[in-house]
Image (cartoon, rainbow, N blue to C red; front, side):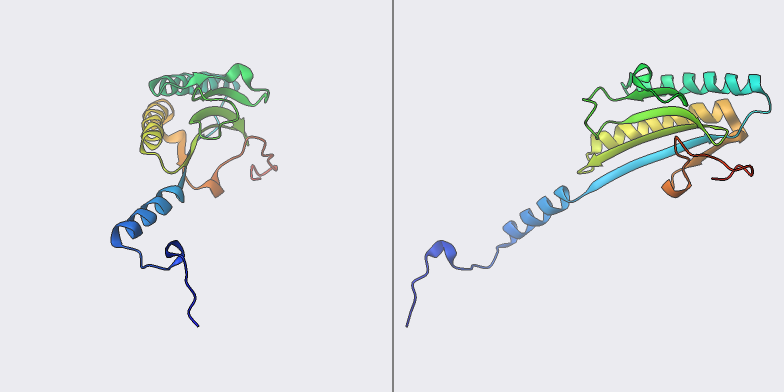
Length: 169
């Protein structure tokens, strides 16, 4: 007995062009990039130095943020440990925004920058790289040997991390 199957339902081998198109679409849609970096500044020896560090770090962050067209959103933050915070002018619920902010944690001044980039958009990555370079140059010139650059998320200091007497979390 022979069954007639509509032509649209018959299996045909995929031609090379169709296969390549599917592969590229899947690769482009399935790729997300998360770029993060943290600049950790060792504590100053004096209280006056600590306040000066906050001011100088805010200046470096502001200069770098303006270079990539981020907007100052420090006034919108409620966390007292935040020194300064800049973000791309996108809706607040948009997680794709490039950001940079300085805060205190574990007795240190910490500058975080990051970008969640679904699809690994090259323009977004380029903005992150420009911001990182500006921050690295400014922070290195300002803080010298006291600066540590961290790209491993497991070694980053969070905003609300507490410390023990030894200074470790």
